Length: 284
Image (cartoon, rainbow, N blue to C red; front, side, top):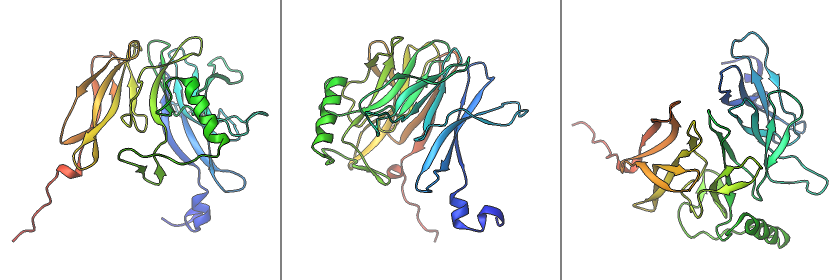
């Protein structure tokens, strides 16, 4: 492909990048995220855009935060949730918090935050239930304990990570020192940890919430031979935190769960592990 931005590398890198879709429960609204270079061309900043599902109106930008927004998700009543970093006079580098943009319009309102930020948002289609994923330091017993430990690390300029297991990196990023937890968001904005001490099991957030908001299905990583990990599907009761493995295949990783609209079935991806596939023999 030639012509336009494809002739120059700088022009190609500057192209906006579209990723992900979120659809409202009634199907009338669709949003996506678009990443664009900042004016200094030093990093991409992501914003949320609304797309007309009928293709009759042009796309319109919904958010304009200087640090960007991500993880959009619609609530059962049509409000839009997303995560965003919004600097304040007291903190110019705060963690990503959860924000709500009402379906009726108006300004977005911050509704929840955690010391290490919020990395993913999942909503129930039929109830107001909202689950979020967030990193917590493994030695913290509570959210306040996590906040205290992070403050100590920041004040003492500690960036070291103590690795006590495998893996230690994912692509170009070190893993840790925190671990991903799933929290249930209450009506008052309080967050309840429903996966205490998960270890590395949740990794990058990969879960789906049932339509009635009573449980979630998550990709859960377990130790495997040869210092590897394998993925099973874990049912997590969002009220009690009880966990049950509902699908396990020793020869494959089970990922990307999606719960059916009636809550009775789960679709997922099955990826055969390279470690379980024998190398082919050349023909003679």
